[in-house]
Image (tube, rainbow, N blue to C red):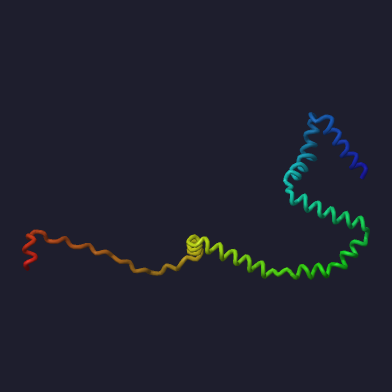
Length: 147
């Protein structure tokens, strides 16, 4: 372990004192950039989770082994609280939200259902338009009305 620590200290010294060396650029690419990218991608939620886990671990270390025993004694109550949360209520709320969204969308929901569930198109009879015969206009208008 001291050899690994000494190697990291030597790498840090090279990175700090001689950043223009090609070895320093390789070390920066291997040791610094991946860590910097990872820390840049963390959100405030990640930091909050880290703080909560650190506080829990610190409490366990501070109390010694007694905290584990106290946690084990409270686990049945914790399980009861978790079981009191009704998953069916969440499902009902989700279905109600879907129903409201469907009612609001209206026509677009109908079109979506029509696209997802296409009707079977059986044989349809089509109307054929018959062309009218041309009228015989050779006779004057009065003659056709008199007949």
